[in-house]
Length: 224
Image (tube, rainbow, N blue to C red):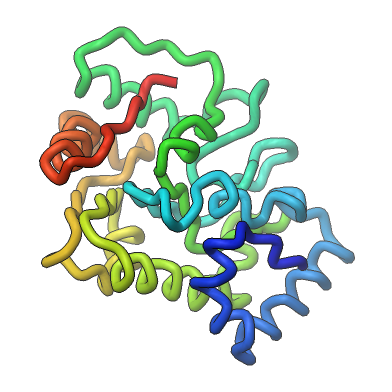
């Protein structure tokens, strides 16, 4: 596994790459990709970082692990490749976006690269997964690495928006300094959560832009 991150991230995360846990993680991931079908493609493991440079991060959306179906995962949380059917959680994200922004939004693609390019870090807690085995790489050590990413963002930057969708993301974001950053907590966009009234109507997209505007940062154009 090559840590082919953009230079700004390489500088910030260099200490992590030298730690024993990351060396072990690297070896485990290389074994997994050599012996099993894993996603995303090895070249896209760090795509979230390469599409959204450290200096450009304005918003962080925390997911759990990549989609495990063939051709789906592209290295960005909640995002799928062009031409792939939009998954249920992402479809609910788009529905809330339409309600929140009071617009008719009918996307044909679930590829969220356009968000990343504007400063939205689409960060999964676990960056890899075996085909058809959700959470199969959960115990390999990725969580320690992505905790370090969140800590670095919280400590080294100011006025970020962290969107914590559901209990998992909320636990993951426990180290965020809420005196420096905006944290928006909602239910998860999965059908189970949404059908229980925990997702729709949260207005997290307009709230994000309102905060960015208040700290003189460019708002996100959420409409792909």
